[in-house]
Image (tube, rainbow, N blue to C red; front, top):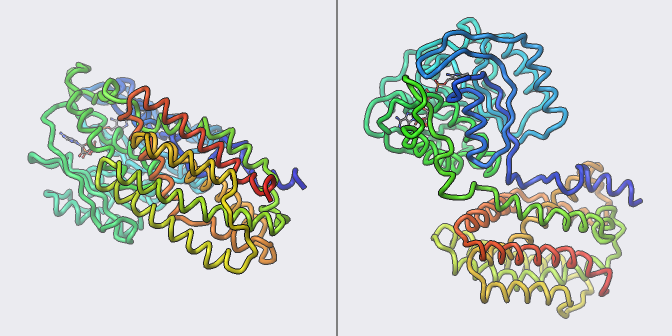
Length: 511
Ligand SMILES: Nc1ncnc2c1ncn2[C@@H]1O[C@H](COP(=O)(O)OP(=O)(O)O)[C@@H](O)[C@H]1O
Ligand SMILES: Cc1ncc(COP(=O)(O)O)c(N)n1
């Protein structure tokens, strides 16, 4: 039983593969090479790394170019691009894909059929046609083929000439006309369009996410910023699109991604003067922020490494295996539920404490809501699950120790340390829940499974979103924390992880 069970509960290669957490997103750029390092895959790899991702590149075309212009383009045989793409996707899970220069229709065909097969979770398409210098990077005859790629992208990031060309219209002359075109393109292909203001005059340089299907909080989300007076705009479009792909894989939220990427790009444009590369339109400084702060996602990645062995232990527990197979004795399940209700009451107080310590109103609201939801789940447990069962009433030893640990941390720890103690209950529970629910669905969602109703509660997208947010807030708190505080965060986090495991194992020991 154990063998077949572990393969169904545990479809991936150990706890290393996680369904929710992408602290270091694996991002593939499918683009052309710019040997001067400012645009194309070179800009993409720098941008992906600058935003905390792991970058990969499948090269569609080689250009001979510098900051002044493009002198030659060589497109290798398209089937070889397909070999590159297959080699990557056969081995590596891709959290996001960014597509840039494609060169010609044969290349586009290969990319299209590969995308149709692999269906990456995040696809950002920068429909590169003409370089800043005015040189063509896509054959005119391939423009129709490029349109056929649009339905396979989640986000399209055309500049104004590209937006006009995709619609077959004259170029927009002001921001209102550009937004109007963006809306029409988004409606035509059912995806999100990023309308970019780089090619318009004026002191402001706005960008806007446009989607008319209700995916965003509004049809148009504008993020403005000052226009930097600089000739160094070579590769801004490439850098923006690959940075967005990376952050989107981490946050799952286009608006939040743009709000994170836009200031970074402004910093890169502002600091471009320090690079002194070339005589023409120089590149931007992708790593301008490096000395100022640790990269986003880095601390969350460390936490995840600490949690991975614990997750492995959880999947090995008899309780989890029996819950999955349906063979869990009812009295064990009842004990678990009763302890969970007691735990949630204590946990809710600690979430409220996080709200009290939060540095911004937005974070305060997030934790205050979480605290309230926790009490609501507790009363639902009593109403729907515990009222009809014979359950022990006292607080078990593991529940007591876990809640005491959380309360002690919340009494004396900083905001960052409290978040680190809180996080495993979100993260490990969400991971275990997704695995259990996934395995249940894979087994055909049998209605006669003793715990079918319970397993179904694990498929809650709101909880997954809240977990992602809790991870990001903890990571952000770590960036602002001192070294000593980071050590305390790691201790609080690992201790809570151990209690998570012990909590699932408690029915075996104490019933
Ligand atoms: N001078 C500038 N100052 C500030 N942001 C800029 C400037 N030029 C371009 N950007 C930003 O760079 C990104 C790329 O924009 P754009 O130049 O319109 O596209 P592309 O590089 O594809 O031609 C956008 O986010 C845009 O707002
Ligand atoms: C290989 C390659 N890909 C894309 C661009 C466009 O970059 P930009 O529009 O910023 O000049 C470029 N110049 N070279």
